[in-house]
Amino acid sequence: MELRTRPLKDGFGLEVLDVDLANLDEATFDAIYALWQRDPLLLLRRQSLTEGEHLEFSRGFGDLDIIVRKDMQSPQNPEIIYITSLSRPDGTPLGGLGSYEVYWHHDQIYRERPASGSIFYALEVPEDDGRTSFCNTKLGYDALPDNLLKQLEGRRATAKYAMKAKSSTQRDFKDAPEAMKKIHEQTPPVSHPMVLENPATGQKSIYFDPNKTIAIEGLDETDGKELMEALQSHMLQDRFVYTHTWRNGDVVMWDNARLWHRREAFNEALPRFAKRTTIFLKPDDFAVPEPDLT
Image 1: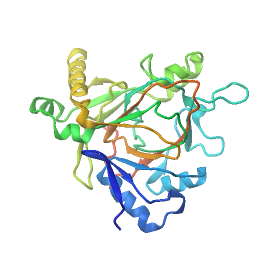
Image 2: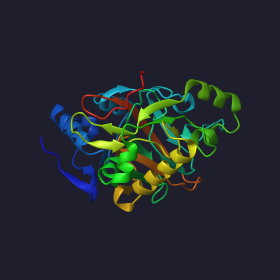
Image 3: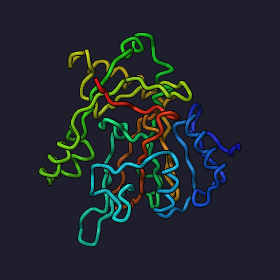
């Protein structure tokens, strides 16, 4: 089945047209699945989903994760997290990630087995505020200069959750040091290859996180920092970055093995409410980071 699409940017990103995710048949789902294998970023506009429908669609791609932050989980469905600046009647946050800037990152790179697929449903978002940018690490890999390519061959990098003071979790838990300590205990450092390969397509992509990667194996701190800075400078060229302006009803699907993303800060007086599932994509069909079992 051939779906109608239009590009979000020259080189990557597709808007999928004329699809209602609440009423999918098997052939349409299979076509979306195949599109996501080929392109790491898909957009479907004008959607209206219950949490049950969001979960059903997401489960078609793999098992769903329940993230370490219980404060962000839906009360009815812990596989769904709330990304919002809103508060409950008692003044406690309804979810997480507030209204501040969220820096470039891969979701879940800090996990031994990352759930690398994300499906984000925007229910209420400020118009022309709080845009999200995506950086294509597959295209970045394809265009690597020889000197950087040689430095990446066979390298692994170590990542750790919420190590930096400006991390979203550090900000959300700035007044709860015991809760932050517990999160750190649940998320020890992990190692992953710096280059991932999709077994179904042969695509390769760069896999490290500008904020959570704390060391590159085989390099001292100075050389590791220099390599990460050189890779980040290469990756953040305009040709590898798409910036999305949200509308109510947008569903955006991204593959964290092939994309970084970041969010601009937005006016905290403006309401923002979105729901996200995080998926253990199937390793036969997607590039899935594997733990170091040696």
